[in-house]
Amino acid sequence: MTAFAGTRARCAGARLLPALVAMALVATAPAAARATPTDPVLAIYAARAARGDARTRIQLDAVFPQQDLVQIPYPIQVVVWDGVGGAQYVRFDLSDGAFEGSHAGLADGLDPADATALASAGAPSATARHVLVAKGRIELELSTAFPLADARVRIFVIDGGSPVLSNEMPVDVVLDAQPGGGS
Image (cartoon, rainbow, N blue to C red; front, top):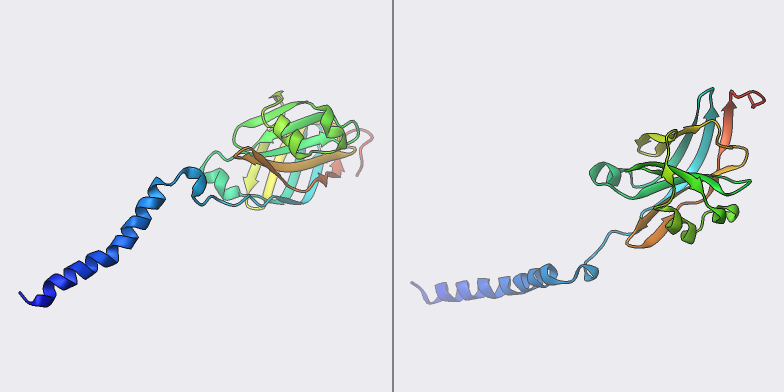
């Protein structure tokens, strides 16, 4: 054995020591100190409604973390509310179902406090459901009795206790098959 053989082994161990210490620190760090995903990007580009004889379908063109819905139950919520009266709403939990109710705070729009209050509010809806969740698109169905005259929609996520909201978007009624409805 040469004199250098033992030196090489000690040098290799010395080079690995900082990496091993760093891995141990990361593994034992509290969860709050570790890197977490950034807030999701939520944006609605268009909201269109078509009211038929039995149902109203609302289509959203939007940016949202669709891939997270596929992998885990991710808390994405979509709220459609009556912009005139402001109280009646349908909340679509994209991983759990649809809920409806009334909330007086919606009269002036959906703000972070309203989102927090609505996240677990409402009664299960017998008529509303999400039909499609795909990249860039969400389709929802609700009763034709829901008022669309000035309906509004917003996407929100409450992750770690803090609400993240999309922009508020008016729902454009592009087809109304109801008596007295448009086109």
